[in-house]
Image (tube, rainbow, N blue to C red):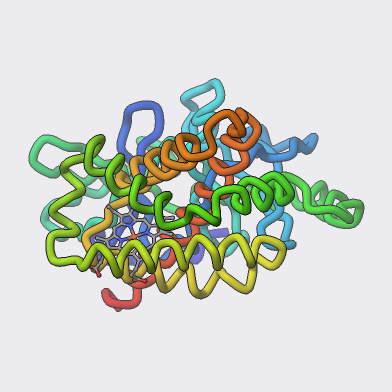
Length: 305
Ligand code: HEM
Protein backbone atom coordinates (compact mmCIF):
# COMPACT_ATOMS: atom_id res chain seq x y z
CA UNK A 1 0.00 0.00 0.00
CA UNK A 2 1.44 3.35 -0.89
CA UNK A 3 1.06 6.50 1.15
CA UNK A 4 3.07 8.47 -1.31
CA UNK A 5 2.16 12.07 -1.78
CA UNK A 6 2.96 14.28 -4.68
CA UNK A 7 6.12 15.94 -3.55
CA UNK A 8 8.95 17.76 -5.16
CA UNK A 9 11.60 15.43 -6.50
CA UNK A 10 14.56 17.34 -5.10
CA UNK A 11 15.67 17.29 -1.49
CA UNK A 12 18.24 15.55 0.63
CA UNK A 13 19.19 12.03 -0.22
CA UNK A 14 21.61 9.43 1.10
CA UNK A 15 23.76 8.21 -1.79
CA UNK A 16 25.12 4.68 -1.91
CA UNK A 17 26.62 2.29 -4.41
CA UNK A 18 25.61 -1.17 -5.48
CA UNK A 19 27.37 -3.17 -8.19
CA UNK A 20 29.07 -0.07 -9.55
CA UNK A 21 25.88 2.00 -9.86
CA UNK A 22 24.88 4.93 -7.69
CA UNK A 23 21.50 4.94 -5.98
CA UNK A 24 19.88 7.20 -3.41
CA UNK A 25 17.11 7.17 -0.85
CA UNK A 26 15.36 10.21 0.63
CA UNK A 27 17.16 11.01 3.87
CA UNK A 28 13.87 11.38 5.73
CA UNK A 29 13.29 7.65 5.26
CA UNK A 30 16.75 6.54 6.35
CA UNK A 31 16.83 5.70 10.01
CA UNK A 32 20.45 4.72 10.31
CA UNK A 33 23.28 2.88 8.61
CA UNK A 34 24.85 -0.15 10.17
CA UNK A 35 27.78 -2.34 9.24
CA UNK A 36 26.96 -5.44 7.30
CA UNK A 37 25.96 -8.46 9.24
CA UNK A 38 24.93 -11.60 7.41
CA UNK A 39 21.14 -11.87 7.63
CA UNK A 40 19.81 -15.11 9.04
CA UNK A 41 17.91 -16.71 6.20
CA UNK A 42 14.21 -17.36 6.49
CA UNK A 43 12.21 -19.37 4.04
CA UNK A 44 10.22 -16.50 2.68
CA UNK A 45 8.02 -16.47 -0.36
CA UNK A 46 9.26 -12.95 -1.06
CA UNK A 47 12.21 -13.73 -3.30
CA UNK A 48 14.10 -10.52 -2.56
CA UNK A 49 14.04 -10.88 1.22
CA UNK A 50 17.56 -11.97 2.03
CA UNK A 51 16.76 -12.83 5.63
CA UNK A 52 16.41 -11.12 8.95
CA UNK A 53 18.71 -9.29 11.30
CA UNK A 54 18.41 -8.43 14.94
CA UNK A 55 18.55 -4.66 15.28
CA UNK A 56 18.91 -3.99 19.00
CA UNK A 57 16.41 -6.69 19.86
CA UNK A 58 14.00 -6.11 16.98
CA UNK A 59 13.93 -8.61 14.18
CA UNK A 60 13.71 -6.82 10.85
CA UNK A 61 13.73 -8.11 7.28
CA UNK A 62 16.57 -7.34 4.93
CA UNK A 63 15.93 -6.53 1.30
CA UNK A 64 18.35 -7.79 -1.33
CA UNK A 65 18.29 -4.68 -3.49
CA UNK A 66 19.98 -6.34 -6.48
CA UNK A 67 17.25 -8.99 -6.55
CA UNK A 68 14.56 -6.35 -5.90
CA UNK A 69 15.81 -4.37 -8.89
CA UNK A 70 15.52 -7.48 -10.98
CA UNK A 71 19.27 -7.44 -11.54
CA UNK A 72 19.46 -11.07 -10.50
CA UNK A 73 22.02 -12.69 -8.28
CA UNK A 74 23.02 -11.57 -4.86
CA UNK A 75 23.96 -7.99 -4.33
CA UNK A 76 26.53 -6.67 -1.95
CA UNK A 77 28.04 -9.41 0.19
CA UNK A 78 29.51 -6.99 2.65
CA UNK A 79 29.37 -3.28 3.01
CA UNK A 80 26.52 -1.62 4.83
CA UNK A 81 22.89 -2.11 5.64
CA UNK A 82 20.75 0.98 5.26
CA UNK A 83 17.82 0.89 7.68
CA UNK A 84 14.80 2.33 5.89
CA UNK A 85 11.33 3.23 7.12
CA UNK A 86 8.23 2.78 5.05
CA UNK A 87 4.58 2.27 5.78
CA UNK A 88 5.28 -1.46 5.39
CA UNK A 89 7.61 -1.25 8.38
CA UNK A 90 11.32 -0.90 9.00
CA UNK A 91 13.64 -2.94 6.82
CA UNK A 92 17.31 -3.14 5.96
CA UNK A 93 18.72 -2.74 2.47
CA UNK A 94 22.10 -4.25 1.68
CA UNK A 95 24.42 -1.94 -0.26
CA UNK A 96 28.13 -1.91 -1.11
CA UNK A 97 28.99 1.46 0.43
CA UNK A 98 27.32 4.65 1.56
CA UNK A 99 29.11 7.63 0.10
CA UNK A 100 27.43 10.90 1.02
CA UNK A 101 24.39 12.98 1.75
CA UNK A 102 23.46 15.21 -1.19
CA UNK A 103 20.95 17.99 -1.61
CA UNK A 104 19.35 17.62 -5.03
CA UNK A 105 17.75 20.65 -6.64
CA UNK A 106 14.44 20.02 -8.42
CA UNK A 107 16.16 21.02 -11.65
CA UNK A 108 18.68 18.16 -11.29
CA UNK A 109 16.03 15.49 -10.99
CA UNK A 110 13.79 13.97 -13.65
CA UNK A 111 10.85 11.77 -12.73
CA UNK A 112 10.83 8.26 -14.11
CA UNK A 113 7.73 6.68 -15.59
CA UNK A 114 6.50 4.05 -13.14
CA UNK A 115 6.72 1.45 -15.84
CA UNK A 116 10.47 2.07 -16.16
CA UNK A 117 10.94 0.17 -12.95
CA UNK A 118 8.46 0.02 -10.17
CA UNK A 119 10.86 0.96 -7.43
CA UNK A 120 12.71 3.88 -9.00
CA UNK A 121 11.29 7.31 -8.35
CA UNK A 122 13.53 9.58 -10.35
CA UNK A 123 16.93 10.05 -11.83
CA UNK A 124 19.33 12.76 -10.72
CA UNK A 125 21.81 14.07 -13.26
CA UNK A 126 24.88 15.68 -11.78
CA UNK A 127 27.80 16.72 -13.95
CA UNK A 128 29.09 13.28 -14.92
CA UNK A 129 27.04 11.21 -12.51
CA UNK A 130 23.69 9.54 -12.80
CA UNK A 131 22.01 8.68 -9.52
CA UNK A 132 18.88 6.56 -9.44
CA UNK A 133 16.60 7.66 -6.64
CA UNK A 134 14.59 4.83 -5.13
CA UNK A 135 11.06 5.08 -3.83
CA UNK A 136 11.13 3.51 -0.34
CA UNK A 137 7.39 2.81 -0.33
CA UNK A 138 7.46 0.94 -3.60
CA UNK A 139 10.77 -0.72 -2.80
CA UNK A 140 9.48 -2.27 0.40
CA UNK A 141 5.88 -2.88 -0.66
CA UNK A 142 5.14 -6.56 -0.22
CA UNK A 143 7.81 -7.08 2.39
CA UNK A 144 4.98 -7.55 4.89
CA UNK A 145 4.28 -10.85 3.14
CA UNK A 146 7.41 -12.08 4.82
CA UNK A 147 6.19 -11.02 8.24
CA UNK A 148 4.47 -14.21 9.33
CA UNK A 149 7.86 -15.82 8.92
CA UNK A 150 9.49 -13.03 10.86
CA UNK A 151 7.13 -13.31 13.77
CA UNK A 152 7.89 -17.00 13.97
CA UNK A 153 11.59 -16.21 14.05
CA UNK A 154 11.06 -13.53 16.69
CA UNK A 155 9.30 -15.99 18.96
CA UNK A 156 12.04 -18.55 18.76
CA UNK A 157 14.85 -16.04 18.84
CA UNK A 158 15.90 -16.05 22.45
CA UNK A 159 19.40 -15.05 21.48
CA UNK A 160 20.31 -12.17 19.24
CA UNK A 161 20.39 -13.66 15.77
CA UNK A 162 22.42 -12.16 13.01
CA UNK A 163 24.02 -9.37 14.98
CA UNK A 164 27.23 -11.17 15.74
CA UNK A 165 28.33 -10.58 19.29
CA UNK A 166 31.71 -8.98 19.67
CA UNK A 167 34.45 -11.21 21.00
CA UNK A 168 34.55 -9.50 24.36
CA UNK A 169 37.23 -11.60 26.05
CA UNK A 170 39.58 -11.26 23.13
CA UNK A 171 39.01 -7.49 22.96
CA UNK A 172 39.49 -6.97 26.68
CA UNK A 173 42.56 -9.13 27.03
CA UNK A 174 44.29 -7.66 24.01
CA UNK A 175 43.49 -4.10 25.08
CA UNK A 176 44.73 -4.75 28.60
CA UNK A 177 47.97 -5.99 27.14
CA UNK A 178 48.42 -2.69 25.31
CA UNK A 179 46.93 -0.32 27.89
CA UNK A 180 50.17 0.24 29.86
CA UNK A 181 51.66 1.55 26.60
CA UNK A 182 48.55 3.54 25.68
CA UNK A 183 50.38 6.80 25.01
CA UNK A 184 52.84 5.06 22.72
CA UNK A 185 49.92 3.37 20.98
CA UNK A 186 48.08 6.57 20.08
CA UNK A 187 51.33 8.27 19.11
CA UNK A 188 52.16 5.42 16.71
CA UNK A 189 48.59 5.46 15.44
CA UNK A 190 48.84 9.09 14.29
CA UNK A 191 52.30 8.49 12.78
CA UNK A 192 50.99 5.54 10.78
CA UNK A 193 47.83 7.44 9.81
CA UNK A 194 49.73 10.44 8.44
CA UNK A 195 52.27 8.18 6.70
CA UNK A 196 49.57 6.16 4.98
CA UNK A 197 47.02 8.89 4.45
CA UNK A 198 48.81 12.23 4.22
CA UNK A 199 45.53 13.72 2.96
CA UNK A 200 44.10 13.33 6.49
CA UNK A 201 46.81 15.53 8.05
CA UNK A 202 45.25 18.90 7.10
CA UNK A 203 42.18 18.01 9.16
CA UNK A 204 44.38 18.13 12.24
CA UNK A 205 46.33 21.26 11.32
CA UNK A 206 44.79 23.34 14.11
CA UNK A 207 44.64 20.46 16.56
CA UNK A 208 46.74 20.30 19.70
CA UNK A 209 48.06 16.79 19.08
CA UNK A 210 49.18 16.16 22.65
CA UNK A 211 45.66 16.82 23.89
CA UNK A 212 44.22 14.92 20.93
CA UNK A 213 46.26 11.82 21.71
CA UNK A 214 45.05 11.92 25.31
CA UNK A 215 41.43 12.28 24.15
CA UNK A 216 41.68 9.40 21.72
CA UNK A 217 43.25 7.20 24.38
CA UNK A 218 40.45 8.23 26.75
CA UNK A 219 37.88 7.18 24.14
CA UNK A 220 39.59 3.80 23.66
CA UNK A 221 39.73 3.16 27.40
CA UNK A 222 36.07 4.10 27.73
CA UNK A 223 35.25 1.72 24.90
CA UNK A 224 37.20 -1.09 26.54
CA UNK A 225 35.42 -0.50 29.86
CA UNK A 226 31.98 -0.34 28.23
CA UNK A 227 32.32 -3.39 25.98
CA UNK A 228 29.86 -5.42 28.05
CA UNK A 229 27.41 -2.55 28.16
CA UNK A 230 27.80 -1.11 24.72
CA UNK A 231 24.32 0.37 24.50
CA UNK A 232 25.30 2.92 27.16
CA UNK A 233 27.90 4.21 24.74
CA UNK A 234 25.62 4.64 21.72
CA UNK A 235 24.49 8.24 22.43
CA UNK A 236 28.10 9.30 23.19
CA UNK A 237 29.35 7.69 19.99
CA UNK A 238 26.58 9.32 17.97
CA UNK A 239 27.55 12.72 19.38
CA UNK A 240 31.22 11.98 18.69
CA UNK A 241 30.29 11.10 15.10
CA UNK A 242 28.29 14.30 14.71
CA UNK A 243 31.29 16.34 15.97
CA UNK A 244 33.49 14.47 13.52
CA UNK A 245 31.37 15.64 10.59
CA UNK A 246 32.29 19.14 11.80
CA UNK A 247 36.00 18.19 11.85
CA UNK A 248 35.71 17.24 8.18
CA UNK A 249 35.77 13.45 8.71
CA UNK A 250 34.10 11.70 5.77
CA UNK A 251 32.76 8.13 5.63
CA UNK A 252 35.73 7.12 3.45
CA UNK A 253 38.16 8.22 6.16
CA UNK A 254 36.87 5.73 8.69
CA UNK A 255 38.37 2.53 7.18
CA UNK A 256 41.71 4.31 6.74
CA UNK A 257 41.70 5.39 10.38
CA UNK A 258 40.66 1.87 11.43
CA UNK A 259 43.49 0.28 9.46
CA UNK A 260 46.02 2.65 11.04
CA UNK A 261 44.69 1.94 14.52
CA UNK A 262 44.85 -1.80 14.02
CA UNK A 263 48.32 -1.54 12.51
CA UNK A 264 49.53 0.42 15.54
CA UNK A 265 47.99 -2.12 17.90
CA UNK A 266 49.51 -5.05 16.03
CA UNK A 267 52.92 -3.38 15.96
CA UNK A 268 52.94 -2.76 19.70
CA UNK A 269 51.55 -6.18 20.60
CA UNK A 270 54.22 -7.87 18.46
CA UNK A 271 54.17 -11.65 18.70
CA UNK A 272 51.14 -11.55 21.01
CA UNK A 273 48.97 -10.27 18.13
CA UNK A 274 46.96 -13.02 16.44
CA UNK A 275 44.60 -13.05 13.46
CA UNK A 276 41.77 -13.68 15.95
CA UNK A 277 42.58 -10.43 17.76
CA UNK A 278 42.70 -8.65 14.41
CA UNK A 279 39.23 -9.92 13.49
CA UNK A 280 37.82 -8.99 16.91
CA UNK A 281 39.11 -5.41 16.64
CA UNK A 282 38.01 -5.07 13.02
CA UNK A 283 34.48 -5.96 14.10
CA UNK A 284 34.57 -3.64 17.10
CA UNK A 285 35.90 -0.76 15.00
CA UNK A 286 33.25 -1.29 12.35
CA UNK A 287 30.56 -1.25 15.00
CA UNK A 288 31.88 1.95 16.59
CA UNK A 289 32.40 3.74 13.27
CA UNK A 290 28.95 2.64 12.08
CA UNK A 291 27.34 4.23 15.14
CA UNK A 292 29.48 7.38 14.71
CA UNK A 293 28.49 7.69 11.06
CA UNK A 294 24.86 7.15 12.00
CA UNK A 295 25.20 10.04 14.47
CA UNK A 296 26.82 12.21 11.80
CA UNK A 297 23.95 11.50 9.46
CA UNK A 298 21.31 12.21 12.10
CA UNK A 299 23.01 15.54 12.78
CA UNK A 300 22.95 16.41 9.09
CA UNK A 301 19.33 15.45 9.01
CA UNK A 302 18.52 17.67 12.00
CA UNK A 303 20.46 20.57 10.51
CA UNK A 304 18.56 20.24 7.25
CA UNK A 305 15.14 20.13 8.91
C1 HEM B 1 36.21 5.04 15.66
C2 HEM B 1 36.72 6.12 15.11
C3 HEM B 1 37.15 7.37 15.83
C4 HEM B 1 37.23 7.66 17.17
C5 HEM B 1 36.89 6.75 18.35
C6 HEM B 1 37.68 9.03 17.28
C7 HEM B 1 37.88 9.71 18.47
C8 HEM B 1 38.16 11.04 18.57
C9 HEM B 1 38.13 11.81 19.80
C10 HEM B 1 37.78 11.26 21.17
C11 HEM B 1 38.45 13.09 19.49
C12 HEM B 1 38.54 14.27 20.48
C13 HEM B 1 37.53 15.34 20.15
C14 HEM B 1 36.07 15.00 20.47
O1 HEM B 1 35.78 14.26 21.42
O2 HEM B 1 35.21 15.48 19.70
C15 HEM B 1 38.70 13.14 18.06
C16 HEM B 1 39.07 14.26 17.35
C17 HEM B 1 39.33 14.29 16.00
N1 HEM B 1 39.15 13.27 15.10
FE1 HEM B 1 38.56 11.41 15.57
N2 HEM B 1 37.91 9.53 16.01
C18 HEM B 1 37.58 8.55 15.11
C19 HEM B 1 37.64 8.64 13.74
C20 HEM B 1 38.10 9.73 13.04
C21 HEM B 1 38.18 9.82 11.61
C22 HEM B 1 37.73 8.72 10.63
C23 HEM B 1 38.69 11.04 11.31
C24 HEM B 1 38.98 11.54 9.91
C25 HEM B 1 40.20 11.71 9.48
C26 HEM B 1 38.93 11.73 12.55
C27 HEM B 1 39.41 13.01 12.67
C28 HEM B 1 39.46 13.73 13.85
C29 HEM B 1 39.91 15.13 13.93
C30 HEM B 1 40.34 16.00 12.77
C31 HEM B 1 39.83 15.47 15.28
C32 HEM B 1 40.32 16.77 15.93
C33 HEM B 1 39.38 17.86 16.04
C34 HEM B 1 39.99 19.04 16.76
O3 HEM B 1 40.86 19.69 16.18
O4 HEM B 1 39.61 19.29 17.91
N3 HEM B 1 38.57 10.90 13.58
N4 HEM B 1 38.52 11.88 17.53
